[in-house]
Length: 414
Image (cartoon, rainbow, N blue to C red; front, top):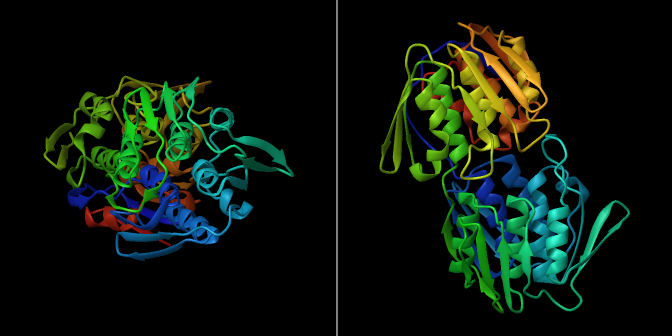
């Protein structure tokens, strides 16, 4: 349980952790590389622990010192246990890496947050074009590449981050050239490509809608610093905004924050980029954030929608959200309503009428980002908020209670 006694105005300076959504594919990529990989700025998260357990099960050696994670890759098996697959959705990214390194792979379907249908058919059809033969056997995926992985032209019907990563991992050590059209453009894709290229890969255009991969024979481990977590940064920005606070975030990449700035500016916050840092000063009362539509990068990210909804809940006026990525991304709305928020849902649209104040209540985190939204709301609410289901939050936020306490929040784990 996370217990918050609010409200409390946040102020001060905190560092931003390494990105969860970059670390997980980087760990899968380390499997491809002979020798040792060293990842710096590696966040201490339960999802990262799960990925490390997958690598160790496969035969790799992993050790951590502070934010440095060392992986010695020498896989001795090609299967992932069901219990590890079910702990997180991103576990599917190991499919392309294991298939490429071992020539075969066996795993069950992935788990993670229940955000509605997130079919992996894009992953499977793309890998099939690279020469993989994939079948379902007893509830598990069994993949083989009898003729080896070979280059292909792959046009994704949707710019899926996971499918793009899986193709990159599978094709990096393939025969020939692979072209991914309508590729995901998220910064985490570019971070993965930077690491693979350091290891000897030849990937061009990552971060754009067309990625070209010239296959190489072998990859070798390298040192790499994980990019900052842009969603964690926006979460702390939202926490400062709802409390009328002023905070400085260090270790951020402001270019990654740009697509998420509009709701903060609309609500009356002053945001100042400061090189590798960012300062936010909030007004005494937020204004409505008007209209938020979630879209693939460089649009407004679905992962940032819940925490911005917590801002809108106490903003003056009406805010409208349109969720275009996940069907069940509004589970936090009912929990915010327990705290006094006025939110009406109709399909993928949420209409939020800002109230003057929220009140503390017992609430439940049903998914990672929805849990973060409840933490943000609890910081602004009058009285005590008790949040259960916090294991979801620990999947993506490193020491969130400690960092918020450093900014002046009355928050603790109980």
